[in-house]
Image (cartoon, rainbow, N blue to C red; front, top):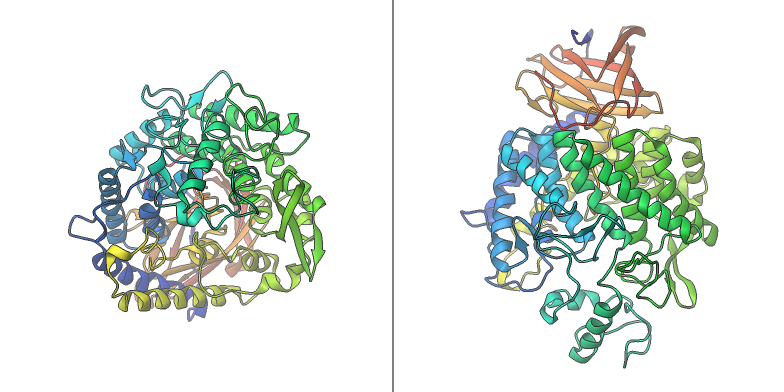
Length: 598
């Protein structure tokens, strides 16, 4: 079947947002190689220390370039794409020599950190799914968690559980050794203690830097937390979904659904609250004296609510991607709603408890809008929109475009949501300017970075990486940035350059999604070149999981054309512009990394 082709009928001077998009892309194309050359040797490894002990750190190496292949998918240069692959290999090599990586995957760590490492790798599937080495790795990594690898028996199929919070290519780790946390002790010393009964510790903080106290903590970690499952492990569903997107094999899909449903059953058995620890026999609170709280990266320690809601939301979104069944979103919804019920409004903001301790709920803080907005974005359900109305700061603080960027380049989801609502019309220019200013700030840091690399911590490079993708994802693809600790990309559309036969917006082309609901998306496409025509393909969803039902060309007076395809072609004349209203059926196709024929 021939694809529907839309041709631009109007020519106009490009709007400011269109010029800003292309300028930002062009300057990040220039900045990324300078960043690489400043901080790496000829073989791509970091100019850094000869020794880095413990289990922590490789995630931070990967995080230094994690969004480079995504930048290519959005329209960055092919050079950045190839550099990203070279640097992935270099990080893998360097941290294998340090001792963290084994068989190209972390030997032992938790899924908050595995998730941070893996998003870099997942983006390769979006960039070019036909690299056989990537495909082979994706399937091999999945085996580590499906009981198919003799060295990595992380999975208990009978109990539908991952056998330890610390896991990886060497399998579950049931005992923490003294050197495992050597480089992480100063960081953990800043958080509330993992237990309330650590000998010699009074008050909420335990000094991990004190060898005696550290020894007591290790003993209790090994006794109570290292055997059994935790919600954080649900982030592993992205790794298995990644294998499915390469192959389409049902065994990967079924594994994800089995594991998500196992945790849904545990939540139900625990009275609607997600337990944060399941013992080796599949019993909630088995090693915690019957307490459903207090597990590794759970309700108490170290981050509290974030370590519960993130994996629940990531895994539910993966299940929806694989099935189209929105009921999986009830899993994170239930936890959000319970916390909101326990919360209160103070000083114009919604506060919820972030931690559960023996005395009850504590550590009330402002509820970040990221998770309820992510759920609304997937569902487009009125119940999820109504939940967002419960945030009193929605009409004020949510319109603000803060300077800088978060670790996951994800701090602007609320003002983007307001823009999509039609309540924050200046958002495109503001976010593009903010990301430009952050590029400038980071390059200035790099220009004056005269310290000794031996003194740098493992986060040094990721705090200077000049590539930012949040604005481009939101504005061009009509979706939020991923949930950082291991989520996949969920967007309304992505693009391919027909003439260059590659992913991403063609040279000179800008895009702006300014409206979306359950069945429609509205996008404006602009060719900023007055000299050259451009030809692009729009795909419905990051993984072709959606379908375009029809298209109405608003620049031609609203003629509606049936599409019924997951792709739509657009030809833009020099200085051409089209504004399209796209009818959509969402989550109706089998998701895949496979790319269209161009």
